[in-house]
Figure 1 (cartoon, rainbow, N blue to C red):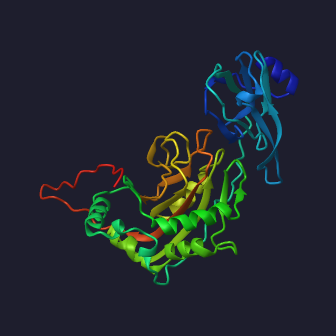
Figure 2: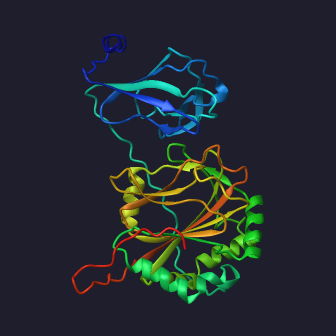
Figure 3: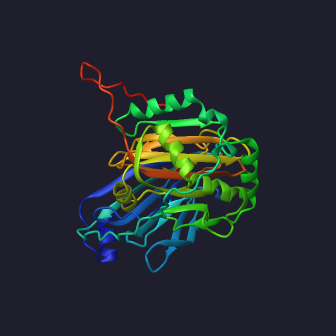
Length: 378
């Protein structure tokens, strides 16, 4: 096949041929990507599954591109019969994906896929990172109108402060449930249900609906919540909770909606921006009508640079607050939301606070420090 492809295309191909097997089962998918890695020149996929129907999902979507070579609309959506072959040239425009496989009453989607190579060097397109506007904390607000009394209790505050002070690196996540005042949370949820949400792309970076916290639609209880998160009162709360000192603190806020099919992707340019931004204390607030299944997706995943295994997971939990101390070489993204998600959306407000100075870790007489244990739940 390599000789035929080289003759047909007029392109000299290297002897090297990569191949691997793929098995897609219920809820499996593959997000948009271009296959541009090293010196790949042609990609191939050979399909084995019998009687595959469109209703099963698992279609290969091929995308149109804009002037920046970012994928836009779906050019073709292919359902592959057994003993069929897909072959295409790899380029900065060869964006494709595999849609989510639906159902368990049929065989898995099976294929062998791989690449032919040339000596052509890859010229990666450097895309700008997503940079959210920063704000300096200001104004005093009454946080007890928004947050429950449990967050202001001395015992919980001391436990949280101790947990943050015991860790050298980003090895902590605290998920605290029932943190929002019920009446206030209901007002915010009602407004979020009727708010204007804008789908954000391009699909190679993210596909998720966001709410403009600085737009004209930000009013009522939502505006009160945003003001509270940006307030000096919230900054004081963060300092008491973490035990950190903050020098010239700044914060960013991101509001997004979790529904089936949404996700974000972490690119090299985003990782570099997180490193430049430095460490942060991240807060995640969740609004919704019902809890989701554990494996429905929508989890905020934290990974460390050059490692594939997640460091931490923050699952979406109604009326909960997740707190994460993030080192500068650890980066978050939102995992794909699959068909198991509830029909009612989950709404998330993300608050990141920068400028924290972590206290020196207490050292015992023998020179050792306190043991490090991941915290889950409070």
